Image (cartoon, rainbow, N blue to C red; front, side, top):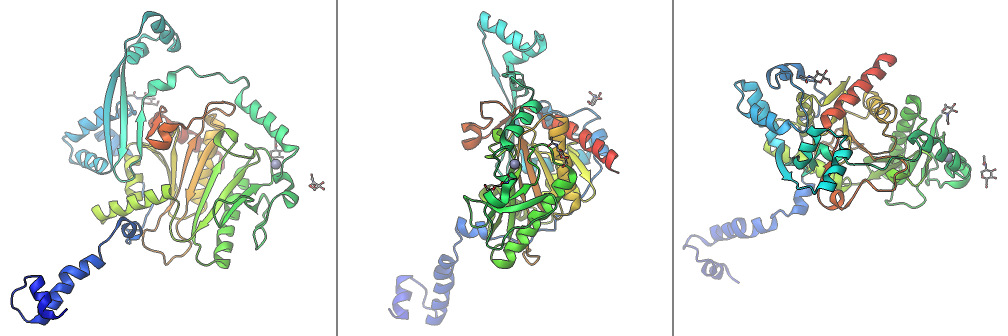
Length: 449
Ligand SMILES: *[C@@H]1O[C@H](CO)[C@@H](O)[C@H](O)[C@H]1NC(C)=O
Ligand SMILES: *[C@@H]1O[C@H](CO)[C@@H](O)[C@H](O)[C@H]1NC(C)=O
Ligand SMILES: *[C@@H]1O[C@H](CO)[C@@H](O)[C@H](O)[C@H]1NC(C)=O
Ligand SMILES: [Zn+2]
């Protein structure tokens, strides 16, 4: 095909042929070569402002914007409506910032109760007339994160539903389980009954690694504590296990240079899906992207950065939770009760780097679950920034997410089709969770410093 026929085909004006060729290239060929698909966009990270820990003055906001009243998940919607039309610029500004990420809505559902059932329901609710009125006219608060699409529906009344009382107190159940399983525990005799990585093991005073015998990924190992008891790990033991994990990531990277993105997963006790009672943490090193759920948060941060280029998404996420009174600060680390929790009692722990501040605060939060909130089984994930300092695009801070997983001996699973395929239903108020965790962490800090 000659240049003249191209001109004819595209009905171009009789300009010099070469100009037309250049036009054709730029307007027709080039865009089709460079047309971005979702695959491209999902790898297309930019450089975000660096995440820095920041503790803003929540007291000021508490006085000015919340009038020193206590927030709760049930009154959040109405409080935000008031915030929107506040006479204070700063409060309206806070409303804007919250609305940039979160949509809070409220819906109500009514019930008609036949007499015998009404008697039953009143009994469940301890003959409390106020609660009974609430049961007949229920308010559900829905929170949607526009960037991550995390979506939680809260109905604190659902927490008042009758629950099966455990036959044994939880701690006794765990002690008995611990004794029963110790006799034939592979992890207690790990040199004979666990696999090693090609480079051997990382060993330390309180913990060691083992290659996972049935891997779900190429680099998949376990950090195992030397003690069998699932609840008996001190700060030293926890920090030691974290240090062993970090050493394993570095070791794997040194033998397999493509792998550089660390993650850690921990389920405690069988009701939280742990296959062994003996504490063991799953560690993975990944090459070019994180697992999907983490990658979703990373893509959310990228999209937020496109919309608000001056702000790091994680900095904003923490600050908003701080201003809602949901955060706890410890040196360069912070923790907050997530306003869109995946499941009951979700806490997010954030750090500038996987350093002592971060791991200590994480330990305090975990012990708040176990020692002060009677949440003995939990699931946790940590996403670390790339091991390579030169990976500056789409660079995550270090963060952990943890949720409690219900009563240790309960038969019913706490995760259902709802959480797996639709949204999360959580009936524990994040504002209550924050208060409990704050008190517990403060107590621990007081005794530690
Ligand atoms: C807010 O909560 C705190 C702690 O539970 C309580 O001491 C205080 O009285 C509450 N304030 C109001 C206005 O309800
Ligand atoms: C560990 O397992 C080996 C092989 O079965 C056995 O000989 C050894 O006694 C076990 N050690 C302990 C401490 O149970
Ligand atoms: C708990 O750990 C300590 C220190 O490692 C140990 O001395 C103690 O025997 C353990 N208790 C139980 C019940 O395993
Ligand atoms: Zn064991």
